[in-house]
Amino acid sequence: MRNIVLNLIQRIRKFISWLWNQEGLPSQRALGLGIGIFSGCFPFFGLQTLIGVFLAKLFKGNSILAALGTWISNPFTYAPLYYLNYRVGSSFLDKNNNLVDFSHITTNELWSQGWYLSSRLLLGSICVGLMAGIIGGIGLYISLKIFSK
Picture: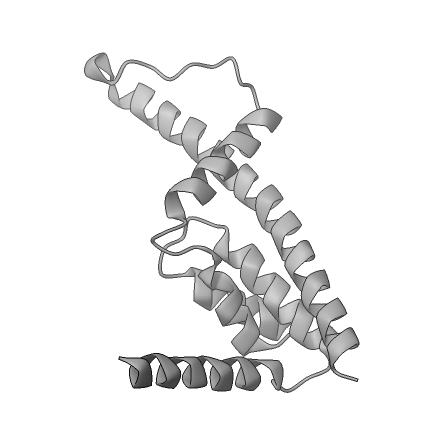
């Protein structure tokens, strides 16, 4: 058992060292991570990594760190992250609009409620993603500047 734990610790150290030594300037690496975190905040399951890598290439950030940043959303964080995104989006849009009773819903009301939920979730995802991406990117940039000397 002890050998398994020591082997796991050694692998984690190698992985962290590999991540720490990614190519690019500190600003490019931080930009890649920030873009990845931003992309990971959206509820586009399966597309978050593709969006993060695409945006990192577009803005000349580190693609590997962008893919890693999208791991902010995973099966353990989906519910709290998207609930937070929905609440933030609702705070910007009309909060007094109540959800309808789904037992007597028509097709038009269903589309209306879909837009109601989606618009709040997407607006919240943009806001939370921007804040988390900026914080994550700046945190990595400062860490790289301090500890890479």
